[in-house]
Length: 388
Image 1 (cartoon, rainbow, N blue to C red):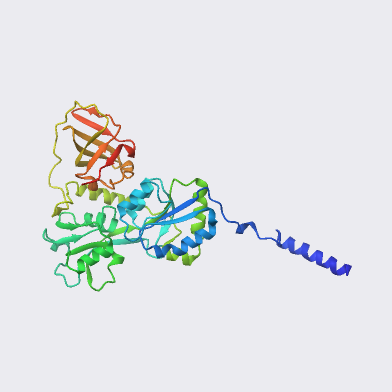
Image 2 (image 1 turned 135 degrees about the horizontal axis):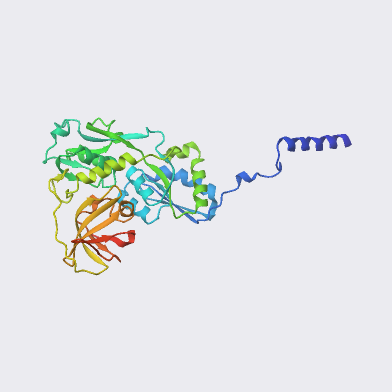
């Protein structure tokens, strides 16, 4: 009996030597990671069903101490998504659009991973018609034709499409997701549409008439509202999720996309459309007039100013300037860094701001020669007013 007990003890000692740790207890690796935040809001622009398994997984990882909230769906506009990132309402942002990825970066969101990792890293924007349309190329487009487009924050259905339509005048029906754009073309409500190639290329009822330069994909980002510790934990948990969960939620690992060329294209598009009025058809995808010189009254000393944006120019790659017709009958020049502009709700880009009513807070006009200049240094100093 003594020899058997001794052998048993030796066996256990040898087992613990080969496999260190407590063999009778669960390892600490199974312990749930603890977050400082009590709520995690996941922001999306596609079907909520794609994220149900991810939510279940996150609840298993973080336990009952953290409430997991899903916000958004396939009907959420890009501008509303951008505003939610400006307001830091989304903790995990599945941006879907590279333009929204740029907006996330400009609002200090932290990169986690790429969206759609199973797709090619770059895609193309298309202009397309019905399969039996007499329109064969961009050169066939006339001011009597109607184009269906996305909103100002869409790379494929607005920015790149506008860049490729330089020199054209068209009736514009904008603000739509790709599914609606396709429907408008198929039903004859629009002669041509703009969308990503993946949305169109396998549809036999549609015909592509133009392909753009390559566009980088979108990314997943974490809010600056989260602590550094929380962001590190969430990043690890997201990237270590089972492959089937990541596949369904359309994300994975990889390096952050380089958006420098897309930013240059978008800036060039904004310059092309400096004079465009998207509230009046047809829209000119070019500028024919020189900026109108205005005489500025230098008698105003107030710090809160309201009026209408009626012109825009780019001072540099980082700085935008806008002409403001003040309600006080004075004319001003608003000067604002692009990164700050991207943090102002309703001001997704200079084109979207044209002819909008705005209010400037706590900025004293600076006399620069014959100009009253308003230097914006904080996004809270500029508000886009709701249109009646």
